Image 1: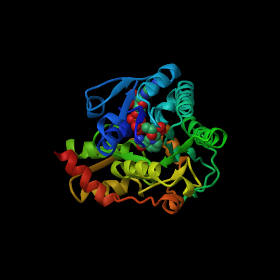
Image 2: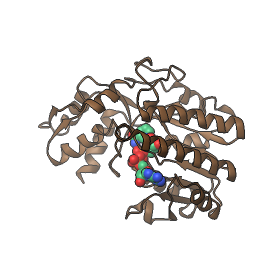
Image 3: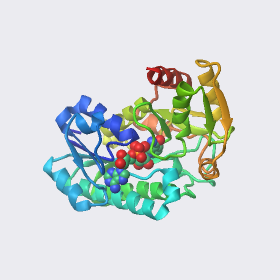
Image 4: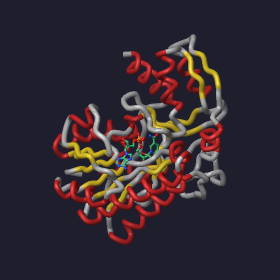
Length: 312
Ligand SMILES: NC(=O)c1ccc[n+]([C@@H]2O[C@H](COP(=O)([O-])OP(=O)(O)OC[C@H]3O[C@@H](n4cnc5c(N)ncnc54)[C@H](O)[C@@H]3O)[C@@H](O)[C@H]2O)c1
């Protein structure tokens, strides 16, 4: 990766990824794009262009202007938001991905886009979900993610585009708020613990989902993109995870730092249904074997860091 083009660069992942990639590869070599512009470090600290990913002409023009050799495609509608507007989600998630893949093909770029634990469904083995298994998701987001994994594979086999991807679990961070996913509760809980000492969870106790702290997710992207291509068998869909917990376990961990923290429940049936259709925990052994994936943060270490950073 020498000249990197990022879509959706002001989102939860993109905003931190842009800053990290600028540190590694040089400020002028990371072109952040999004449908909007704001005052964030990602938008202000280096090249930034407004690009709507459904507008293929502008996307290719901007990528050509900077002569990029890598496309990192982050713009998407997330699980809960996509369920509220499935047709819009299909058009943005599939149309945007197709345009980003075409940009990579035309400019002979390396390509990265994330899949998700949402690419699994109720008929998938729920515990220690294997890398290669049944994928029959019941959400529009999941349908988009499975199709995206396959489309990325197709561009590799058909056109030789060096496509790579990760199935991310819920990502937890303190920089940019999450954008409408089912696992957002695990971010909100830290903000509310610091601000009000209590949290009302929309996900029920006993609902286990995989999670990862943002620094581990960013490292995983860089490591996968820099990995030796000849070692990659599962190019576009590596299971990665750092921990699996339910709302009670994260609350108990927070109480180690804020003993008076109170937890209550007001379950949202839409997001609970999505969560119930996802695995309890996934098996990341293919990522470990093929390119050396590892996560530094478990629940205890992440909680200590989140509360310290948000406390400031
Ligand atoms: N955050 C997570 O926990 C998580 C987990 C698994 C997978 N993912 C995947 O990672 C990717 C990025 O997720 P995120 O959490 O950063 O999302 P986000 O919702 O925080 O950010 C998405 C960004 O895309 C931008 N965008 C929306 N429509 C656009 C358009 N038409 N053109 C250009 N930009 C547009 C938004 O302005 C926003 O800045 C997505 O593919 C998502 O499915 C995220």
